[in-house]
Length: 142
Image (cartoon, rainbow, N blue to C red; front, side, top):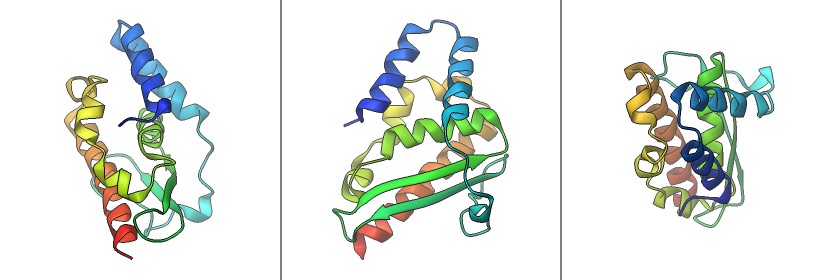
C-alpha cells in the first residue's frame, strides 16, 4: 500500500543501522522539502497537539473519493520537518479514498519511529496523521 517514495525511505532506514544516522536522514528529508509560504502559516493550517509549530496545507485536486491528495508542510523544528517529509512520501499523490485506507501506524512502525521518538514527537506525529485523515475524509464525503 505504501508509495514508492515511502518504500525508498523504508529501504534507506533498513540500510542505516545507527539511529543517529536515521535521525540525520530524517532531517535531510526535511531540509529537501520546499518551504511553506509564510502566508499559509496561519491558524487554519496549524496542527494542534504538536510540541513544535507545525502547519499542513492540503492541496486537493478534484472532489469526492477519487480526488488526488497532496499537501505542503512546515515546522520550526528540523526533525519535525523531516517527519512531515515522511508523511508526504506516504500520502502525496494518492486518492483521498486511498489516504483513508493507509495504515499509517503500520507503515510508520516499519521505520521504527515509535521506539525512537519522544512522547511529544510521537503525539505530534499522530496529530499530523489525524489532520491528514480528517482532511481526506471531508473531501471524500464531498
